[in-house]
Length: 245
Length: 210
Ligand code: SF4
Ligand code: FES
Image (tube, rainbow over all chains, first blue to last red):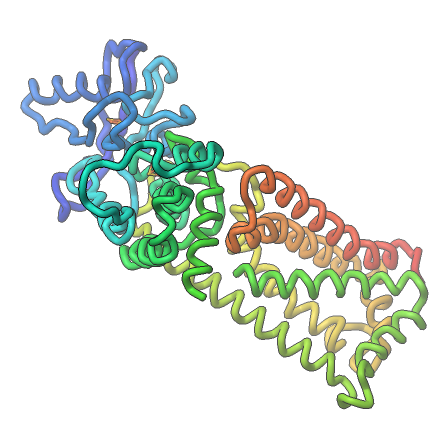
């Protein structure tokens, strides 16, 4: 299949950036979206051009490195799918595809489609951990956990920190990511001692990074490759309100 | 947003029920208006309760607008560069019109107060009985006034459809199965409110209430 790509090119943080059109010829429908870009890049390199920079690592949907806004949708229109797991068979032959980086002030563009997501790391550093006494690892069954809690905590823990929620949110809010991390720990017994300080610290850090406020539009959960539910945000709000009292 | 919004929703519900008094005749409507002003009279001055409620409501409106403006400004700052292409993936039309819908509703409220509360732009005039203002205001000759009201009320309904469940979410009261119930409840409540508000002006315009 042949495609027309409109890609955001920006040589560095200080460059203004622009959309550039490329033709991608003989794309196999079995390629992943990133493999398609690899092929385009090989051609660019042969022609002496600068290849399109994009983030990626595992290419199996678990690391959270990849991500771009494809035709106006973070990770593309295929639901619950990371960009690396999106396949070209979901596009029509001859289609025109716009590709842009995540857009948010706290995610500055480093180059082309690569953005700096250190803001997420700082949110985690603010409270996304549990403090445990050092020593040998405790027995796995030493602390009983209710099955329902374990399931919900696990669901929240599947967040891979890709940042699609921020990219899709009309407010540029990081609530879904932060809420997933807060919920993951606040549902488990190990997370109880620091539960309220954690919620407060992480939410305050999120605000300090310059992310917007949540207005419950639901755009985040719709594009989240892991389907993190809005329930986590309700959980975060509960803990935060308790902590602020 | 959630708390101030809840205050306003409470007011709207009472306001809507009060309006329906017009179906019991002009007398009943005027008596209700009078009753509101003389509530707890020996203990509080004339219009005491009403003035307190008005102050509370005014504060809620101002704080609601302040919160909305703050959120909008934060959102603008968080996304300085817009997308070339952006497609919404969430369902719900109401969500997209919260901001401009809110502004439109605020403008409408100014007109509404001038019309039916103060009577300055009402044919019945400033010193008229409330029921007269209402009935003369919605005569067929002023069909465009009725049209403005209908549009505004529908906007209010859409605003509440998202606003009500959103308030529950913000306060952390929506989890799991409860989400569906809360959303349905918000929809039902908004629909009832819209119908309740639309009934009097339409009934007057079509001559059911004279
Ligand atoms: S919540 Fe979903 S969209 Fe947001 S960072 Fe986690 S996995 Fe990505
Ligand atoms: S490259 Fe790891 S999730 Fe896509």
